[in-house]
Amino acid sequence: MSVDIYNGLPKYKSHKIVAARQIDGFDTNKDGSVMLTLKDEDIHTKNGSSASVEVDLEWMEKHSPCSGGYLVAYEDGYLSYCPQRQFEKGNTLLSDLEPANPIDAAINAIASKLYKNIVPNEIMALSQAALNLAHAKEKLAGMNK
Image (cartoon, rainbow, N blue to C red):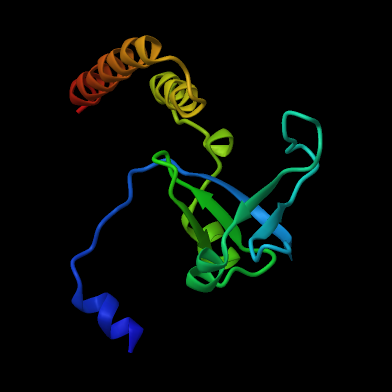
């Protein structure tokens, strides 16, 4: 049935960057909230402890997360969950992207800097630089035809 629904709806390609980390486990607090422990030793909070995120029971009931799945954070602060298979099939870590040419490398570097919460006037300058590089790439592609 879900294949029929998929086939019957308009298709979209996502163009957003999300932050995510695989969930290692979770513990319920006395107040009913839940602490999600995130995988990988390289993730730490400011005080040096392993990273964990507190979510409420409503979030847990809505998303029904499992260990191994991914906590997904959107730029606007929205938190979601994605099962491991679907997340890994549909997402590529920004640092794993291998650009085919130097212009793509520059665009990826700019996107990566934007992703790391830099100050607003730097965002404007980098956005303009990314647009300029994208236009240069289009011109080069047209010249090579």
